[in-house]
View (tube, rainbow, N blue to C red):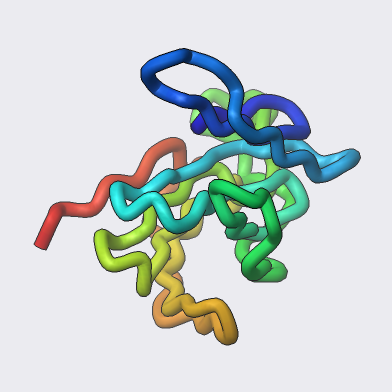
Length: 138
């Protein structure tokens, strides 16, 4: 799966053809994660929300509102933050937790299910936008 501008695209790896296009009008998708289980596409958006979609249907499964602030904290060189809201995302291997990073410099841990999304932790260790998150297998 890839994201760019206002859409997410799910691709067939062998044929390199587009299988599905998910769009959220007037917003920019900053990041996506497609876990090995293949049961969700988790995405971070410029409006500060995390959205989860079904990878075959494109149906919205859940939204985490106000996951990250819309205005970034700037960067160390004094430049303008190119992205707003959620800038990086990574689900746990079992997809029961999501770690998100934002333009606000915060890293947050979420417990997620289709019916409920709860923030477990919020960490402010970085001075600028979070650009990548990786989780060790265990």
